Length: 332
Image (cartoon, rainbow, N blue to C red; front, side):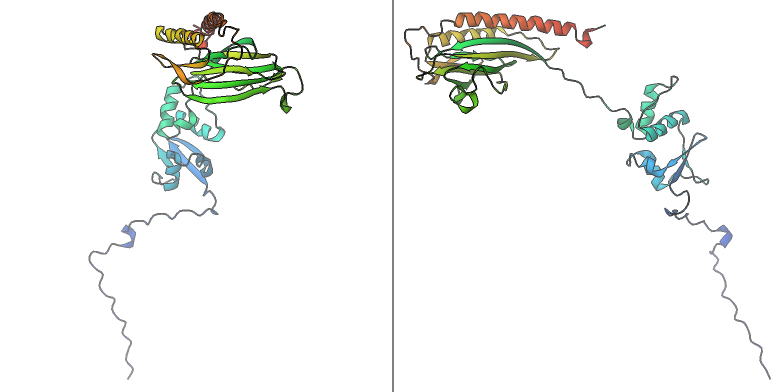
């Protein structure tokens, strides 16, 4: 007698199980790079649709548009990213992504576009801050001196805004330089600037030096060393006043007194380089160049040099007034 096979009864469904039709749809997996349209990003901005390539948004990887395209957190059912923004302004920003230039229509204000660009984190890239242009003006005065071994050192006390350039030197002998700061410290005891017997100056005529500006707020002393063939050396200096168009060259009464006292000390002390501070004049402890000819009164031409320096300062101030007059900021 054959027995019929009995199918096992399925286990009862749990009461809390949800039917397949009511289950939540799993998130859509990201499309691969090989899939058509994977690199295309669609934006729905206030009802207007904009499309671009993902690599275009990678131009600014940390900006809002690139982050939205990568994360897909604002993607709608139509696979577009919704943005509740002004579509006219968004078109300008997206056009900047493509061309790198900001094209502003006549009916759109620049401030509105700047605000929208800041919202999308591209404000600094679209509207970079222009660095202020620092214009430097230089007033130069050419000076010629003839130095001989019997002459006292030629001393220049430079103000902070001044520079000194030794342009040329000609003659037979050696030209020396000593540099002392205003605090009384000799930074360069002795340096040869020109030597007629040196290989570099044997061509004859005026030797063109390197022309490096000597900075201000220092004291420079020039002298010629006595040798068998030394006669005199003619040097050409250029005294520069460097300033910006907005600055005014004007010495205080204390600075003028310091400069005047410094030159007076140089006149009285021909055998030492005089140094100054902001409020006093102090003679250097070490002697500079010994005067080889006691018959010549050292420093006899210093009053004329003082007068010439005052005239140069006046000319520099007049030149500066012309610069301010023609400056772009002063034009109405």
